[in-house]
Length: 265
Image (tube, rainbow, N blue to C red; front, top):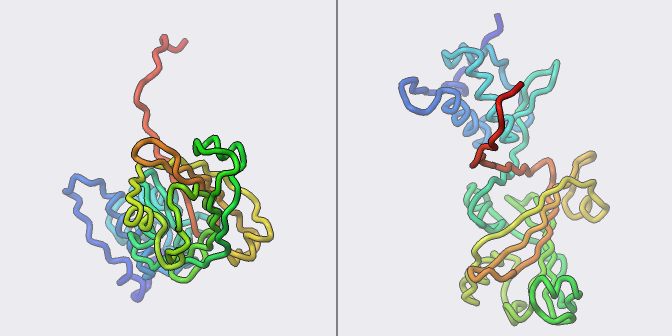
């Protein structure tokens, strides 16, 4: 019978409250999530089989499977047929949430954000983009390209477009060491309210590979973002190319109204 080694059993000591309102499988998922994110379980490490962990936690194998289902949906573990279950390298998990800058999101997760400026220039707004911003075609716009890093690791290549009229003299600020959103809100009095994002998976181009130090066979998640101010005006257009091995997007949806139909025949 397979069991945990004496060394590993200490790592997997988890206190469960089976009388609590929170389901046991969610308690297990939360405990394992913390082990993964704290590094006590190393990236790519093999996890013990479900039946072994079920015995360790004193639960059924079905309960353990439900916990693993949660962790797999969050992109924290990966099941490989015939090989077992493995920890996935820590990824930035983006869910439906309050609009946050990259820097705010990384700090919220206990990391250290930084940037590497690729280019900062002023361009003439193309007609289509000018229409989106409700400015005149050819009006000056900032085009800012940065590599965004978390704990020194390249995570995303970001390209931002903003009308110069919304934040004149932006070049006087240090946008390498500071969040753009923080600069906008604290120095220009801009109130950002919401954002819309379109997410798709693409094959990386040469620039993505170079800027993000992409390993072979890793896809890129392309996030096109529109950010609006509190008065409903478009403030920012951004395109972020995230490393697919370090970033996962989770979309949550709700069913608010059931369609009316007759009985099934």
